[in-house]
Amino acid sequence: MRLIDYSLEQLLFSLDMNKEYVNTTLFITLFNIILLVIVLTFSGLYNVFLALIFVEICLVVIYWILLKKYLKTLFLFLQPNRFNTSL
Image 1 (cartoon, rainbow, N blue to C red):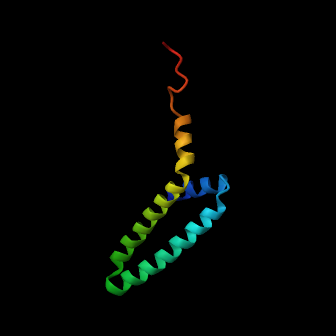
Image 2: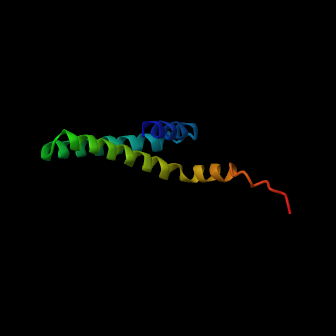
Image 3: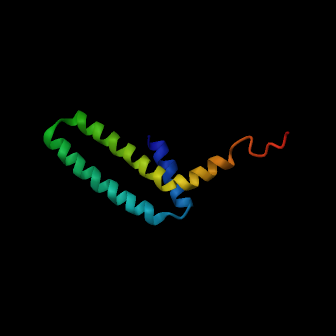
C-alpha cells in the first residue's frame, strides 16, 4: 500500500499540486489521530492495526480523486491501439 501511496504522492509533486498535498496530509493526520484515540479507548492493538490500514486506504483514495483527471489522460494516451490506422 505504501508503494502506491508514495507513487501517487510523487505524482502530486510533479504536477505542482503542493497545496492539495499539504491539505490532504493535514486532514489524514488529524483523522488518523482521532481514529487512533477512539480505537485505543474502546478496543485493543489489533484494531489499531486495522485502523492504520483503513487510513492508508483512505489516503490512496483521496490521492486518486485528486489525480483522477491526470490519470485518465495518461491512461488514454497509453492505449496501444489509439494510433491504429488499419481499415
